[in-house]
Image (cartoon, rainbow, N blue to C red; front, side, top):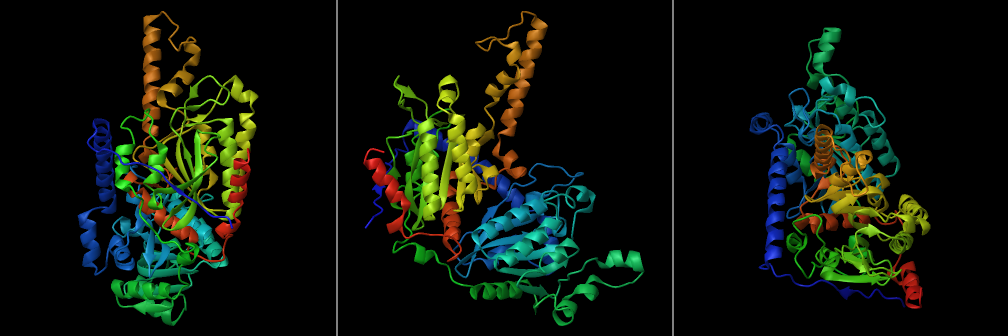
Length: 572
């Protein structure tokens, strides 16, 4: 019988060592900045608007989520930085005015989509629909129940041109409602206040709709009807609980207030099938890493160009710091293998940053780059994970593909296309973590966001771009440079202009590489402190295994992974 034999990896680090202390101080500064920004975003439009919500006898959106989740569990938001730093006619839209988060309710992971009632009464801004749709996509891919907490006054009308039309405009939310229903994914809605126009459509396809006494659902609110038909009525008269619970049948039950409605939602979730996570642990239990995840702050260098041991990162993310590495002597720039996270099997694919042996001779070559052997190894391993039903966690820190005459002779374009094809057609869930560099086509090949990972996380160190700013500025001004990248001209004024132009390009690219920029425009799902990575991975891996019978999950005795290992040990 084939067995999964994993070996301990990692070693203790000396937190008093000067280099480690410098790393920790650098990461602490990044984390403090991240925490400050997240706290500000979490307060929406601030204390004045929080007080306004409380004056109405309602809870804020985050208070609702805190009441909804199981005690002792953490709600894990995604999309926190969407629209971060953008100005909309003198107004901001923190988190795009909607909270999307993974929330455990009655022992079941759910995707919660909740309008932020402290930001323009839960209005939809540019990218609000895309953020809602992204959360629905995750739920659909993993067959995870969706809970809508609706308190939405409709589109923020001054920006309707960027919200209403388009393939992923507001209307696509309702298509996703329909696709979720068609796939049998449970949807439960609580309506807590304004629910106008598109906000009114969002809960209707849900399997169960609860309304508080302050809530109403209408195609058009009282103000619009008064203007159009000269009828002096309130929105509660038009579409309150009296109408929709007892007359229209558009809602199922009414609740006196927010806490009662949240209790009813929890009771509804409790009736769903229990999680299959214990079953798919195959007799194991969740165990913390042997080395604290918080120690990652000391592992990552304070300077992005410096190397670090990737196995020390893996050792601080996986259960008991145990790992079954496959093909360790081939394609050494890539680390592939199997571990457990929360007692559940996952495939791990990671970029090795060390100097590695050059199989063609000639000493060492840098890691963090994709060479022929590593690409072939990753493609074969990715296909095996897909065949066996193992979710894949990609730990990405990549500068790109190898380049040059020898790389082209070896057919790297073909090998890279094989890997891209594999990742494009995988059915197994893939989770991508951008640890540091995410550069060029290597970002794509390592299951970057365009290749539909079920979740992509960034860290405060992440640098996502085609290439580094200095390198790109050289490429942009290549015609003005010699073979050593020195400026050719002898004209002082022309030299000054070229130098200034190169500095501006480099500065702009450096700004573009800030993970907040990527998160603001939804090029990544969430920025996570490195000490939080284990918690996020536990949650998303459990979500991958929660529903039973919706995707192939093979017993480890019959993994094709064992066949690959046997072939390699026999001289593969």
